[in-house]
Length: 123
Image (tube, rainbow, N blue to C red; front, side, top):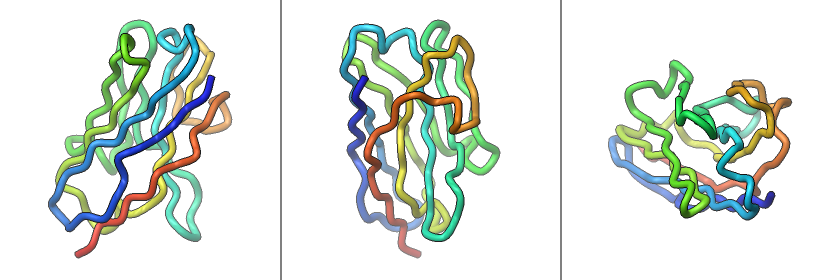
């Protein structure tokens, strides 16, 4: 499975962005997919995850109510809609896919990673 993120950019505080994670592979629809981010000098942070089967999702408290994860299995794509962006959301955002049958916030439990897309939020 190969993952390619897109949609990052430079926006102002309060703006919105939608990130996309396009995947190759026939079994992608069965994988859970997570979004993580990493700011300079900080550890990789879990943002959100969506299951492959039921489509259930889980969010970090820092983005709950502002970000929405969704997937379109027909397009092999997972999205991260980010609203009300804040300067502290500035980071490189990564999507990752897990073959495990459960959703996880631990980056060590993901098997495939994209190259990342940079999001910069100015104040």
